[in-house]
Length: 216
Image (cartoon, rainbow, N blue to C red; front, side, top):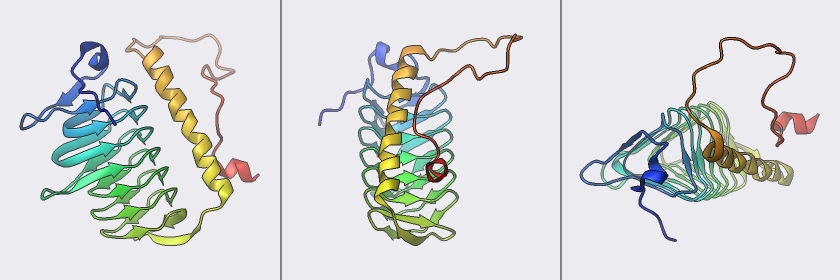
């Protein structure tokens, strides 16, 4: 796999908070989208078709932060690690929900980490596993593939169904679509001061609904 160093002005024109430390510069694939308010420091590698949302913080100043292709870190997410060889790894297609914290842990392929969850050092989340919103996965905890962990501290609730895993995989395309939309059309603007019609939303996006709606 070839990673491209994010030095070209056309790649980084929308990124404002990218910092080197000890001479180590973050790497961002040109097909990825990093919001201008996100912060990347040091040994951070953002792979192809990744999304890094507003106010996310990826601090590679103690150890490596690696986002494999198709993974995402949503609004306000944090990735960091202790010194001494720690790293954070997001496997291909891993999805980290709003406000979650990853510290020195590994996520397998197509993992879903719920909003405001915390995954601690040495934890290993298996492929296709889910971490519930607000869960706290303690240090060195193993989440088996295709299972869901919930609670504080997190415990294995059950195995996921094929339908739940399919829902997650189909939902991944919504973020791939968002990356394309952001690269094509997102720009800083001044707000309008008035609007004539509020009877309908102005953005209508086709995609996968929340999981509970698929069970109605």
